[in-house]
Length: 234
Image (cartoon, rainbow, N blue to C red; front, side, top):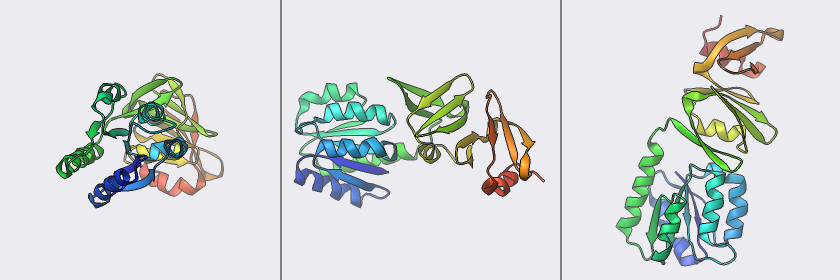
């Protein structure tokens, strides 16, 4: 469970760091006293973060506004607001906060919260959320046929639609279950259950034909041996 802490008060950050670092399976990726620095970091690394601990009353950029932005960058991230003010609770849950932690909090309260976060992380989900323009689309993993790199973005081919998303293909590879999806080429991730035909190609390579997808998928030479083993190709 990878965490980021954003709080302009140093003692508050230190307290959260203490509990996160001693909790089994939790990892503190970064801490920020300046929300603008946090924003810059999360623009590049949002999909790597499981949980964001976020103060609300901060200068320059308050936590609620930062949370709204981050929700679009990584809809699956768990956002926990940590604040001394009760009056922001309704606003926090309108942007689907995982929890609302009031300062000062007890040791048992933060430990129970971390335990809940850990359980959520371990549960295997059959859905994934992606940002497409101004919308957040929720896709069933079984409907994803191919993920194709397109410069710094990716095209996601499902059984019915094709979506363009800001996620990098390396981020998709981290989030999709490796038992179901295979990186056959630097530009392609395929759903192994959607492979329809394997066509012999030049230089002893292969092209993959997928169900409900117009794109032919190459298998890179570096992946040939592993690919043939997966499909028992002789």
